[in-house]
Image 1 (cartoon, rainbow, N blue to C red):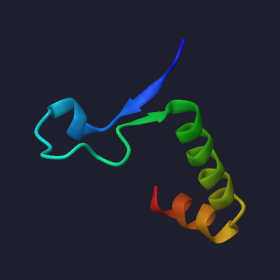
Image 2 (tube, helix red, strand yellow):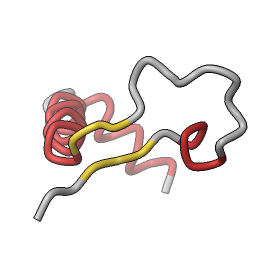
Image 3 (cartoon, rainbow, N blue to C red):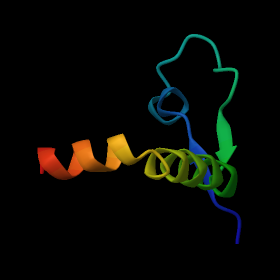
Image 4 (cartoon, rainbow, N blue to C red):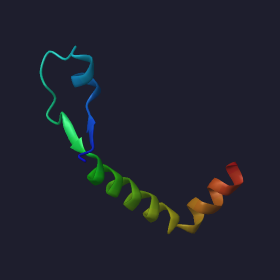
Length: 54
């Protein structure tokens, strides 16, 4: 099974020009998001600040 995220401009069909990236592999996006979350969780001040905000 192939999973992709599709640009909203492509879905709506209202873009005059096709966007540079119309489809993005879901696995690559997920990996990038997980990497960013892990990087944030390695910063104690971010974790503590988030805990206090909740």
